[in-house]
Image 1 (cartoon, helix red, strand yellow):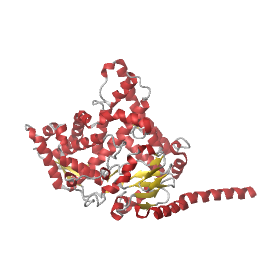
Image 2 (image 1 turned 135 degrees about the horizontal axis):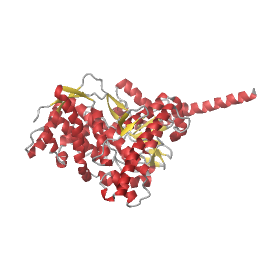
Image 3 (image 1 turned 60 degrees about the vertical axis):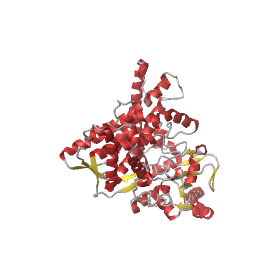
Image 4 (image 1 turned 90 degrees about the vertical axis):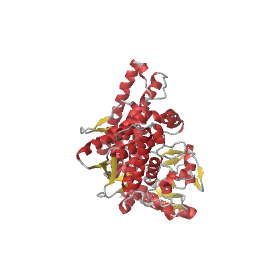
Length: 529
C-alpha cells in the first residue's frame, strides 16, 4: 500500500510540475514582460501551441492567419516586439520594430535556427537554408556568384521559354471557350519549379517525377511541398506524435514511429533517391568525358568533386541544396506571382496600365506581328524597364509576403537588442508583416496601390523585407523577380485577368503565407495586337 501511495505521489508531483511549467510559469512571465516593457510589447498567449493557435483562430474569425498580428502596429504604434509562448511552453520574442529587426539580421553569429521538424532535418539540414557558421559561409560563397543579378541574365531564355510553355497551354484550351478558371498559384509554381530544375541540373533537364508507394506519380516540387504540409499535419492529428517531438525533437521519427511518420519517412527517401539517381548518372557521364562540364549547379558541384578533389563536398549536400532551392524557389515565387494576378484581376485600371507598359517597351523594336513574337523579343534590359510590373510585384509582396517571418531562432550568446536583454537559450523571431501594414510607413496599408513604389521616397530598408535582409537574405530574390516579371508579361500580352467572384478568398499560412483557394481568377483570351 505504501508503495502505491508513493507512486501516486510521484505521479501527482510530476503532473504538478508539468502544469506549473506549461500553465502557471508562462503567466508569471507574461506579468513580468508587461510590467517591464509596457507598450513596447504586445503579448499573445495561447495554451499549448502558441502562435499556431493564434494563426488558426485568426483564420477562423477574420479569414486571415495573420489577421491580428498584422494589425498590431495599427493598434499600438509603439510596439517593438510580440511576446508569445511557443509549443515547448517557453515565451519567445518576435521583433517587429524595423531597427530591432535590423540588429537581429545583421548579427547572425548570435543566433542559430531552432531544432526543426524531423522532415525539415531530413530534407534540408546540410543545405544553405539550414546551415550556420563557417559551413553556411562556404555554401553561400559557392552559390552567391551564380545568383548575382548580372549572372541571372544567362537564365533568361530558360525562364521565358518555361513561362511560355506553361501558360500557352491555357491559351490553346481557350480556342473552344471564352474564358477559363485558373489555379493561378499552382500554375505559377509549375513554372518556378521547372526553372529551378533546369537551372540546377541543366537547361535540357525535365521535371523530376517521384513515385509514391501507392503508385501515384507527381513532380518532385509538388511532392516536396506536400511532404512539408503533411509533416505538420501529423502533429495536428496525433497528440502522441506531437508530445514525442517535444521530448525527442529531430529523433522523433526514429523512435516508436506512427504509421504517418513511417509514410513520410518513405516519401522523403523516395524523393532523395530520385535526385541521387540523376546525380550518379551525370557523375558517370562526366567521369567518362570531362569535357562535357556545363555551367549549371550540378556540374559546378561535380567539378569540385571530380576535378578539384574537394572532399568537403558530399553528394548528400548536393541533394539537400537542390531540395532547399526547389522548396524556397517554388512555393514563395509561385505565391508572389499568383497574388499579383489576383490583385490585377480586381484592379482593371492597373491591369490595363501594366499591359500598356509591356507593349510600349516591346513595341519599340517594331516588326512584331503577334503577342508571341512580341514576348519572344523581350530582353533583359526590357525587363529591367518594367517599372510598373516591378511595383505590382512589390505591392503584392507587401500585402501577401510568402515569408512573413523567418525560421525561429535560438540565442547562442547573450546579446542586447534595443532595450531587450536576450539570454543564451532564448527563442526569438522577426515578423516582417507588421511593418508592411504600418500606417505610419504606408498610407492606407490595406489598399493595393503599386503607385506607392513608383513614387517611393527613401525609407528604412527594414520597413519592407519580403526577402529578408542582412547576410542571410534570400539568395534567389533577383531570380524570383525576373520569373515573376516574365510570367506577368506573357499573361498580360495574351489574356485579360478576371476575378472569380464565386470563391471566398482567405489568407492562410501553411508553409508560406498566401491566398486560398487557388481558383482565384479567370483568364480570357485577348485579341492579337
